[in-house]
Image 1: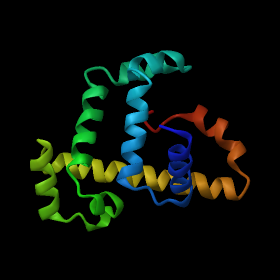
Image 2: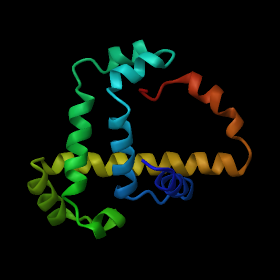
Image 3: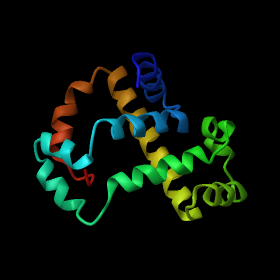
Image 4: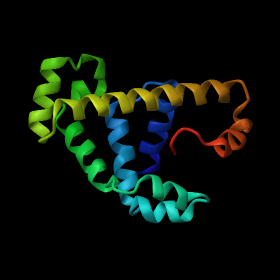
Length: 142
């Protein structure tokens, strides 16, 4: 991802307006960095997280998410609230996934957007300095 796109994604994250195009850019950036397991090896406590991911194939899941997003129209990617039941079924058929997979992706984007809004609020209040303490607490499955 180039600097312009990264700045745009960051702006959307801070504003809490994360589109699926932004989400897709982040997935592609993660995939370009190498395997998730190798990244976890570089993070303190990453070995513990690898144990929690045992049996899961994060690379496969990222490819599935990418296929689902690419099966959306540009308008759906920009405005996920337009995605109703019929659209979910069409997206699922187009990506070789199940409607439940589309629902999981929609919920993951919503969770990421909610988290981004919370961090944006902390940053605006000058409280982002508390982040290292928050990260050390864990408890979120990460």
